[in-house]
Amino acid sequence: MELNQRCIEILQSLRVNGDYIKTTDLAKTYGLTERAIRYSIDKIEEFLVKNGFGYLEREHNKGIRLRQREGLDQFIDSFISSHTPYKYYFSSEERFDYLVIKLLLADSPLSSEQLRQRLYISKNTVLKSLSTVEERLRQRNLVLEKKHKVGFWVTGKEISLIISRKRRCHQK
Image (cartoon, rainbow, N blue to C red):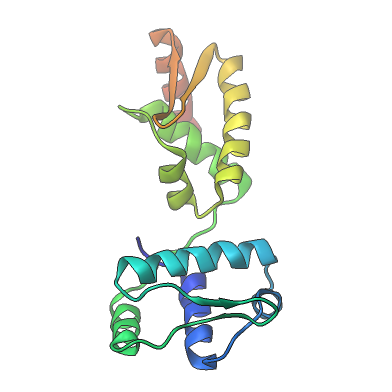
């Protein structure tokens, strides 16, 4: 798992501060909701654990802070210097187009996690966007199939799929 630019900035804030920071303060600093901050913190924590540095410290009414561990500063410096996160946030129209194209061209089911990571959006936003896609596909006699722990894929008469693929290609 890689960190996006926002997560790297928050990790740096935790590192530089050295003391507890409240999520409300981080939300104000970055102009985000507290939920978006918690989501980013979860990603940072998952990244740290995966790389052997353990969990963030959490203290009720104080906030969170980065535990100082041997080699952590060098690891973070190395990661930041070698990693340039690509971060592009799709507009809702671009997100819709991306989802339709990916679903129509997919050879196997796509998981919500794959879509979430590529689009830099929450799982709920993926599901909400897919409901819009589902309605548009239905208008073209196609069905967005869903299966828990498998993913999403499009079914329908082959001619409907071919026509939809051609329309998508010619619209671009």
